[in-house]
Image 1 (tube, helix red, strand yellow):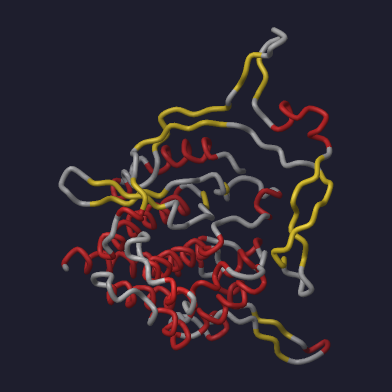
Image 2 (tube, helix red, strand yellow):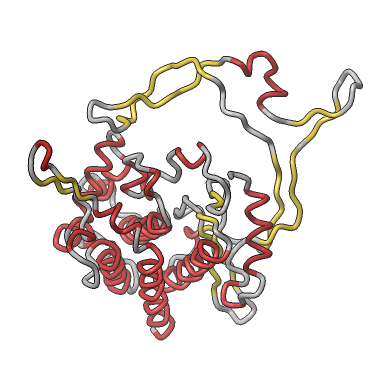
Length: 341
């Protein structure tokens, strides 16, 4: 089910007993569907694509991704007449009000803010049965508390799904913000998407900010940007980006080439670099799991009837809770270290 208002109301009810995440997720103040008085005086009409477009709603030309030669979406588009997606205009008022990460300017505070947000994410996943599916640098905010500290705030649940509801086609689409989309999501293996994909996205948020900084004032010189490995996370086709991320994350040595390009002028950037390596290892090369659970490459063995395929992403879905617990422990440990610095 994709209904942000219902998600927020459910989250509020389910998470109300947990003080450790209070203030780290939006509390809904008001919200509902937008309606208009008809100009002909015949009552009220809902603001939806169906009511606004009328007969045009039946058939329009929209952009649809065309599949690549390898079965993955290439990112190219073509005009294709089909039913227009049904959209409902809703408005929501929530509290607290946060500020964007670009105003943070401190890696130590970033670690604290992300720990707050991912702790809330963890509670929401396991206590409210709601999966966020769009962790990005825009969907984590922060605000100052009365004691002068910063608090992280996870927002934007319009791509979230209620895992306790009947699975519908709304779960079978990609979601997320391109540089932060998980490998499984990019490959459109959305039936395998779990909370681990949101943690992978969180890893990308740290890596992105570590490389580009919080804002333009801290960004690397344009000449340096041309040679950054991370820029390929949003260049080329979706199949290209998928392969790039598989290669970047597969081993610690290769990932180290990317983290070596973190901004030296960011204070305490070493802690950020250590954190992303620890998160990557916990997620992709966890020593507590068997070899078939590790890595980012899909492994094929044998031929014909004896051919077997091992997908480590599929394997890891069976350890979702265990791995999410470990990832949160890692992030909270680094948040504690950041607070002491």
